Length: 421
Ligand code: DGY
Image 1 (cartoon, helix red, strand yellow):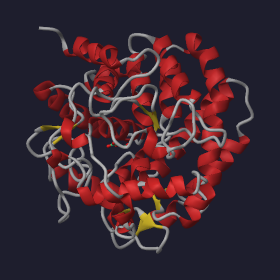
Image 2 (image 1 turned 180 degrees about the vertical axis):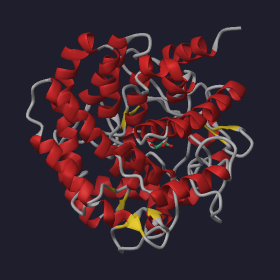
Image 3 (image 1 turned 135 degrees about the vertical axis):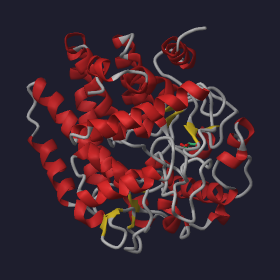
Image 4 (image 1 turned 135 degrees about the horizontal axis):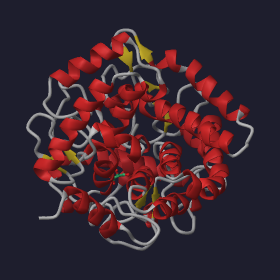
């Protein structure tokens, strides 16, 4: 019987396409942006050079605008929809036209700290690209203050209830006829609905219709919501990038200025009625009025507070394994449907980093032990039912294997060596 560490390494190697890693075979047959950043962290536990390669390959598909796309379609694969023919972005290699959570700098810092000497030149080469992506986020997507998304897929938490009010304003009728592929790979009950997909595709069609002009998508597109999750990840990533910039002798004043402006905007996503950070529909000014796991990313950016602590304990105490992606006391809660309730090991890992930084090592350890027990029971699944641990979505998942190697499978003593401290 091979150890879980060996199984996790075998998953990373098995999903490795030579320079980039699939999230999982079948369901996600290309390179995904934030999945790749976590893959790099995982690789760094046994092959530091390969970790940097992963980040390099991701950033090599950066657009001239600075945006880093959410999917890079390196090789044709008929098993995924919507493929490059639907996105029509004109990039080479083909990419999608939207982005994903900017966790690459957070993971690059970890990879660098796990072997600073070997990583110095790699980090120096990557730094200007990461900086250009952050500039894009601040200048193009933080024009209302907090970080805004123009498609739920950009949040990485595709169908979480946070986006329901924004999705309600999207007319899905322009999607036309199409055949989904995701529901052929995994249990359709665990995936977004047909109504969701019609709207997702309508948004892609809007992007194509304006030739992926970001200013027009932000101004005239069908969907624009402030995402607490990305806002906090970007803040954290700015600060991590500044640490790397200083180590390289760069002037980080501009970067820290962006971070300061973003921090100053945090009160606009605090919903007094909900008593938590909340997603905000920037088209109507309405809050989503639903607590989601994105709000808890506040700990990553040193933006926790006692009210949020109370909310965290309330939702955590209602489930048995990890942090649920959506409020278990809300009517929309669905423990097995993608981001509408399941717990995601990768989100638990980010939250644990934040909790530890906030001085709550006890909570970080509770989260680690619960996440580890899910993986020990069922293997490296994409997500899990937080009530009864049922494994959900894709199997042999890259980021679940990566966070096992870096965090979930490590005891407290070895965390520091793996960069999780
Ligand atoms: C999918 O295809 O489900 C992805 O999450 C979109 O990025």
